[in-house]
Image 1 (cartoon, rainbow, N blue to C red):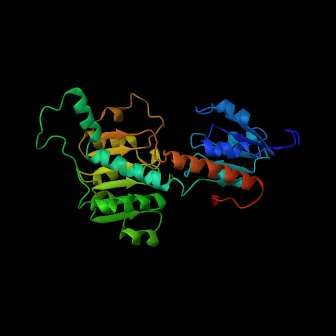
Image 2: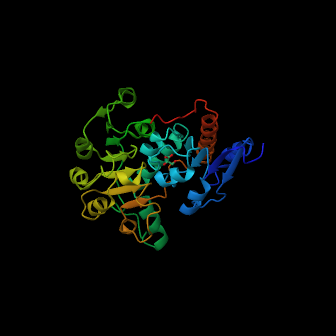
Length: 328
Ligand code: DGY
């Protein structure tokens, strides 16, 4: 079959090796790829997607009406190499009858581990401590120097007790957390009972938690959920951790809360925008630890995500059930 007769797949980035290998075996398709580790420029995305039947994209690609129009009526499947799909214009996609898939489950452990790592890094002030060792600030052992907050006997509030939220909580149990509370769109009793968690309001999460951990997806309801009012309710000693999506936290309000002593510290793996500008005020704060969206960044998780993304795409194009289809 000539490439003009084959269905076209457009891939917006070089993907991890195991997925890349699977893609190279899909020789009944005309696979075109932005063969780079850098983000595809918008004009190349618009050009590349023209006539595509399948689109394999990343969370950094804004798949909006313009992209869908450029792709045209051939487009049947959008397969994203991520759990989150807030970068996809779901309304438009739905209207056009395009199927969507994502990569849940395979990155849960990696993301939960990173969340715990970020929590410990933030509450025990590791970046500050490391800096003091390097800059000569370490003069002597001192009883109150670099004291932080411990997890033992604490109350942990989880915003979003889905797969990742639950995996985070399970990893925190051995640290001696006394109480788990959570919010979500609705109660999730099967998850809650594993960690004996109580379903509460957003206000109560803010008021009662020593550590608030954000693991929900980004929706109109969760956008800006951690804002001035939320921080005002938090304990002065409390710490906020976000490994979900940047816009769930209002960063200006967070900056105010951190500088005015309204809350003790924050650890963010996600920001708005990404990357966060290097002169952003949050980056100058000692009580704010920021990582570059590396929640799922283990080799195993990223390879598994890439394999699942390709499998989703190929099954979708074949008109078969996709391993992880998003119900729109
Ligand atoms: C996702 O999968 O949505 C994460 O943000 C990146 O792994």
